[in-house]
Amino acid sequence: MKLAVAGTGYVGLSLAVLLSQRHHVTAVDIVQEKINQINSRKSFVTDGEIEQFLSEKQLNLTATVDGESAYREADFIIIATPTDFDLEKNCFDTSSIDEVLKVVEKVNPAATVIIKSTVPVGFLDETVKKYKIPNLLFSPEFLREGRALYDNLHPSRIIVGVPADADETARQKAGKFAELLQEASLDRSPLPPIMIVQAKEAESIKLFANFFLALRVAFFNELDTYAEAHGLNAEQIIRGVSLDPRIGSHYNNPSFGYGGYCLPKDTMQMFANYEGVPNDIIKAVIDANETRKDFIAFQIMRKNPKVVGIYRLIMKSGSDNYRASAVQGVMQRLKEAAVKIIVYEPTCHDSHWHGYKVENDWEIFTETADIIVANRFSPELEICQAKVYTRDIFGEN
Image (cartoon, rainbow, N blue to C red; front, side, top):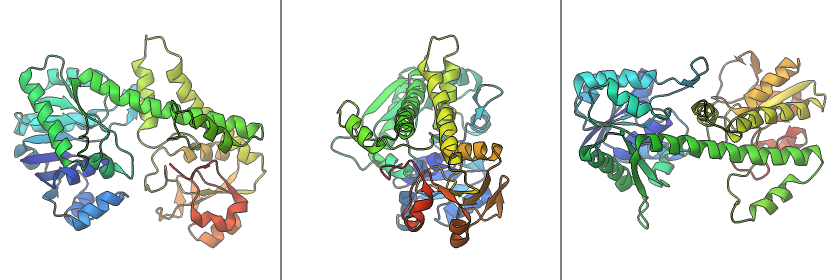
């Protein structure tokens, strides 16, 4: 079977690697450098499993910038292009999906096309009216950055959404795609559960799942804010709360706020979806995330530092992605308060990043900074632990 994957970010690349173990997969991207690295079996994203599979596994995987040729021969086409949130339109920017669909409609409209990019609720039902592509589906992804292939190998669930007026053929195509993902997983007892639902429900599942994760982050951050403001032991409180089996001890580590590519934009899309619908929690979680950054910046400024050192711009440990990382919101608040900032980020090779001085000489960085701000603690910080300000209690993302 031949598959094409449009977009080679964490989602697209992990799916391309996953499915190329059993099928011929062509990965498509507009960036030639990414194509060259995939064809050389090198990963341009930080993901241990992707790196291992590319270097060690026998994969039937090629990459190209020629989307037309890749889509023309494909039985299944997976779209995993970015959908950033457009603040002016108050909605995801889905133009990258449209660009792919235009090409598919031209060269291979009979293919089964699965949208993996995160979209607004109702997007697929509107999209099927615009294109003469009979088999158009939506399948939400539930992947962690830095563990994307691992999560594809061990999926918690496989969900495929069909259009509202889908016939039995569309449902069969959805089931076939779900089986492709299921057979590629390493879990057999039991097999990952499959749900075939209408597209609006699938789109909602994705957004509500990410919103709940953001809510959980915001809750434990506000707990930590209370503890720090009153001189209490946040770790003991969190452990005690989390021993309740209804709550659990997962995903409870305080941070500077939720960040990264998914949660900030998905929570904003959720709020946009609630226009005209009574709600209190949705907007409160978004506001709570900003309040947390205000509090973290205030706590840092209370120490009257001459120079604040920012340890890593990345969203979380094991990642190389800076997109919307929570620490950037803290940095902006410090900058507005005229606090001098230097940044330690080994993956940044420029002397300045968005107006901030980058100092990647470790000794100079640690000697210059009066306080070192770290969203996530690392063993290399132990030597200067007295200077470190972090709310990382459990050493987990």
